[in-house]
Amino acid sequence: MSKAFASQADLADKKITFEQLSPHCWAYTAEGDPNSGVIIGEKFIMVSDATATPAMARDLIARIREVSDKPIKYVLLTHYHAVRVLGASAFFAEGATEIIASQGTQELIVERGKEDMQSEMDRFPRLFRNAESVPGLTWPTMVIGGGDPTRGEVPGKLVVDLGGVKVQIWHPGPGHTRGDTIAWVEEEKVLYSGDLVEFEAGVYTGDAHLEEWPATLEALRALKAEAIVPGRGEAMKGRSEVERALDYTKQWVETLYRCACEAAAADMDLKQAMAHTRKSMDPVFGHVFIYEHCLPFDVSRAYDEARGIKNPRIWTAERDKEMWASLQD
Image (cartoon, rainbow, N blue to C red):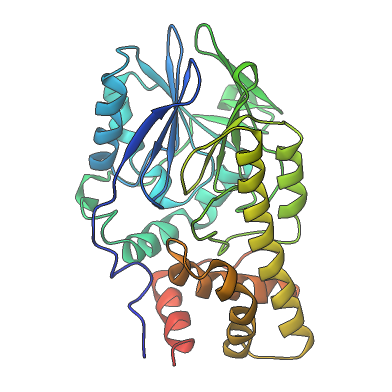
């Protein structure tokens, strides 16, 4: 039987949690929806990932205002997917002057930002039910990894002092996208990973670099974080729980890519590759949030990469639906 496309059948509101993880660090999570992070200093606030729409961002802002009246000066884009970034404009009224992203993320916006926006609006009708509040694509004002400071480009690692707390921001390596960026509060051992790490939720890999992703996860493991806000799933507290999230994501990525390589070696077509992958993935991950949404996109990308397509093909609303239909029974 044909399944509803992507998350079009997921229309029920999720329970939102806003919890403090350390003296300056907070997590905004919602039962498998994209998470945001909040770091509150004595002078300024930084938000990591800006939600799908300005309308959604206003709920996050309301939660922040319950605990602080400091200006929200910085918004970090951990990567570029519409469900995480298109709410950024709501923060301008709260004092935001800097939208931070990596050079890789900036390049992805140029290359496929418009297509990604339409694709994700079609995939996630609940998250984009206030799409009219989105003014357009979100563009960074400060780019990490560039080389021209006159254009707001910052080489290497950026350290932002919020007053009483410093946030390290850098690109640890490709994984979920080629531009993934983390926020690391070293003094409090809190990591904001974006979609490089997930827990008990689908790991979307439609724009991923699967072969390199495990090494990037090991770079994050070396930080020895004591709390992590993953891209989806609950905030994990304690070293053992952080390890669980890293291991969960690594198992997903490695299992998916191994199955794709096996399918490519056996000259399977995409539908056969999907059936082959389900044999390994369904028993372990089939129960988690947005699993059925993610898997067709994941298998498509993994199958491409296994056949030598290193730069992920651009998803469009039309390609999404053609792929989905081709994999239905």
